[in-house]
Length: 361
Image 1: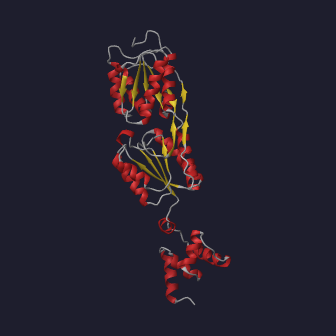
Image 2 (image 1 turned 45 degrees about the vertical axis):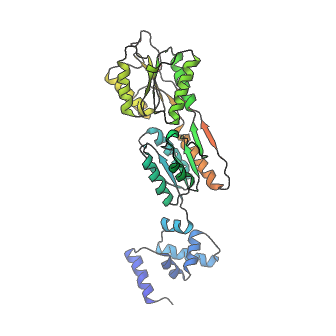
Image 3 (image 1 turned 30 degrees about the horizontal axis):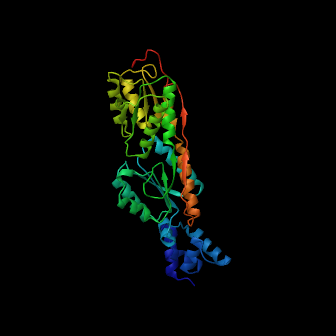
């Protein structure tokens, strides 16, 4: 027979909304804590009748399992970590959306970290995720190939959980990942400008310590070489993927004695800076100068600016990365390294055109 004290506690739980514990459920159902734990975690054998008693007690007490407590008992959570270098960049917004769509299908939660391209923030995020007992990580590394050090490698390799790279290579490691063919994208964009009639083509690229920037520069050079157009150092600029830098560089380009007739801009954020400078200087696109950007920028469609661009499959990048992580979680014994390369597409909207008597000629 249950004690008077127990009924007093039960009354306080129901009336005052006190936190319900496994002990409370065990007493209500007349079973041990271990039995309640087995029912909650769906582990071990429990008689049908006993299970029904426990479930009835859970319902009557309106018990909600603690995710933290469950992770302590199972040594894992239903959560994955996602680390990106620039959450304000529409590129990563689309990637995260793709990850989230697939995660929802598999009832997985996401803990998201933004590193602001800061190495220390990334290392801190990795350590915090380790404490959260997550199942796996999807990451676009801030660390570049040239800056890689033993501390970073040790942090990644000691996790003991699946890690999937999203469009960011980590040298000397063997992680699976999904990437965009940046060489093809930059080649196609530069070639489109050449086919439109341009021979003086500038590039505003990212920082050359990053793999995407290196590959986009290769694509740019390859296209010029294929059409026997000399590579001119004066038309090569580095905007570090920053809006402000691209704005300043574009103003520099417009002041050149022999400026280019077209600009290939290597990221969506830099396209915004470029367009701002052109607008302030009352430069018409493509009448005065032509441009093509890498990555889609939805805001340009909204305001009716027909800017040609290389469409990196960002949504698919996130979806594919998440599916790769799920495959790794479902088959932890399989150590096969997978590298998926997604092809970008060029979308021409007129800004690449060459206009006779171009302002820059």
